Length: 103
Image 1 (spheres, rainbow, N blue to C red):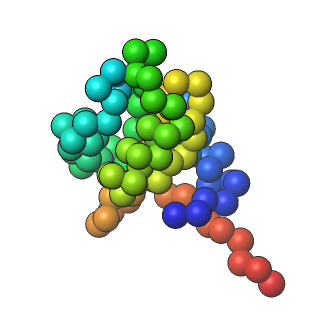
Image 2: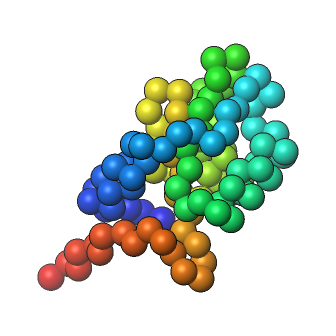
């Protein structure tokens, strides 16, 4: 999903108070980590993940890989943390600001 700057800012503001729910270490992005993150999206639409210093992979690359594997949207990468968004299919709890229509 392409976010507008307003939508991205809204998600970032919601994520500011979130504690990381996962840590990715030296094993990097394993199938087990991917599965656990996918399961977290059953109860959360927005999650923050920390990439530990012992993970030798680039944080942005890890974030993109996790985003692709979980079919979620990368909201931001800041330092060694990143935020992912995946709305609930039936009843999303996070309502994004509407994108403006081009006139």
